Image 1 (cartoon, rainbow, N blue to C red):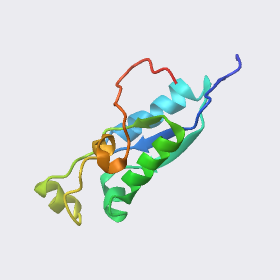
Image 2: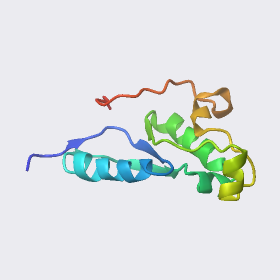
Image 3: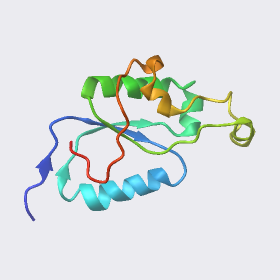
Image 4: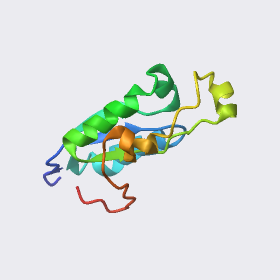
Length: 118
């Protein structure tokens, strides 16, 4: 097998809810790991983890993106009143997509691409 491509930066890996974390794991295992040496810093932005940490995990992920300059975020659930009951949450947490808002201190744009250039 040919030598793996190495990434220059650490990639902030933000896991999500439902099937997205399963699909992301498959993508990493089957499509990336055999060919790319990726150094990641992992954050679980799943709804239960955001509730456990009073959403501090989202701000920690934002700080990591500021530090490393790049991240991959899986889809997450933004809870409404029904989800608060269903998951027994403390409150209706804001969407982690709000990483792009002034509350996180980030000034970036989400880019959805099948061919990212790291």
